Image (cartoon, rainbow over all chains, first blue to last red; front, side, top):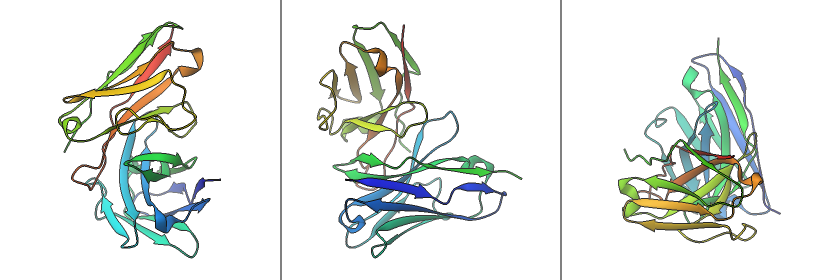
Length: 117
Length: 108
């Protein structure tokens, strides 16, 4: 059974860093592209980054390139998102999702990141 | 950067048909994907590659696309269809994705 579970969210001060993890079961992360997507409170969805394939292809949205780093641990079957220089506007629920045929067929329940002093 | 525009809200009575549009230049070149999101839940994939429905998604949900506009149609709307709906473009240049602005469907 396919399952994704995010962890690592919490309250962080502006300028701080955070590492989010996406634990996966039911498939191998090395066989699929995995994306991170966020949703600010009361707002829409924003795609952030993906990692995928044997070549570990990586791409970032312009809005986060340079501050966010995505990585994959095949032995732990997980994907991580390191976020640096956090800003108030990074406050959001962060989801990881599996990419199949260009869309996201399985999502985790999300982890909330709150940036506040 | 590309943008996908959806109507902010759509109101529909039970049993009627709701149509949600998703407009943007990128839609002329990429497939459309549609998601349903209920409060406190992760999005659920309803439609992929313009018209395909994943297993388990009711037949009342259908998709179409023409030119720069994709459309999600909910036929015979049910009370449980009250939710937010988002479109998404396929990977632009094979690299990145864009979500639509979202539409709140209200059953009246």
